[in-house]
Amino acid sequence: MNSKIEALKGKLIVSCQALPEEPLHSSYIMGRMAVAAKMGGAKGIRANTKEDIREIRSLVDLPIIGIVKRDYPGSPVYITPTMREVDELIEAGADIIAMDATARLRPDGVMLDVFFREVKEKYPFQLFMADCATVEEALHADELGFDFIGTTMVGYTAESKGLHIEADDFRILREIVVGVKHLVIAEGNINTPEKAKRVVELGAYAVVVGSIITRPQLITKPFAEALKELSV
Image (cartoon, rainbow, N blue to C red):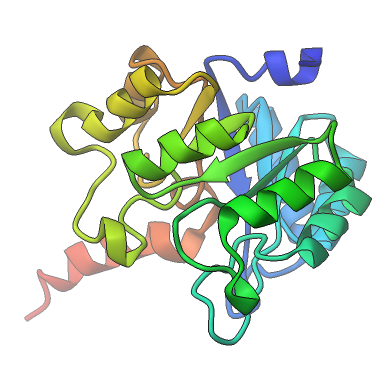
C-alpha cells in the first residue's frame, strides 16, 4: 500500500458529490469543494464521475476514492455497476475504485462474484472498495478480496431497511471490523465530529463524511424547519 493510502489511517475523507439535479452540480465546483475540504484537514476525497475526479486531481494531491453513479434498467445497482464505469475511473486515475458490493444483481443479471473476478483480472493492481449494506455482505466482500470494506449502503437497500449505522454504538461496524481481514472504511450518516471520532476508536481505518459538509441544501433544511415551527 502506498504512502498516500497509509496517510488515510484514522483520518477524514470528504465526499464531494453533486448529482445533475442538485444546485452544485459542476466539476468546477466539486474541484473547489475538494480544495476547501483539504484546507479543513481532510486527507482524502470521495468523488463521482470521471470529469469530477480529473478536476479534483488537478487541484489537490489527496488520494481519491472514485465512483460513477449510473442507472441501468432492471437493476437497483447504481454505484459503479459495470465495467464501463470501472474503465472510466481507471482513466481518471482514481486511487481507490468503490462499487456496490451488495447481494443485488447488477445490470444484465450479473452477480457481484462474477463481476469482481472480471474486474480483478483486467486491473489486478488497482485498489477496490466494497460499498456494503449488511454484515453478511461485508464478510463476503472481504472473502472476494476487496482491499477496503465500506458501510456505505447500510439502510439504503431492501435487505438493510431499518438498519442504522450508529445504532447500538455502531454495532454493525463493530461486527464488520472483527469479522474481516481487510481495512474498514466507515461511511453513511456519520454527520457529527463525535460520530467520526467514535468509528475510528472502534477500529475503522478511515471515515467518509459527505452531505453534512458538502450539500448546503441539506445542511440548510433543519435550520429552516426549526424556524418554521415558530411560525404563527
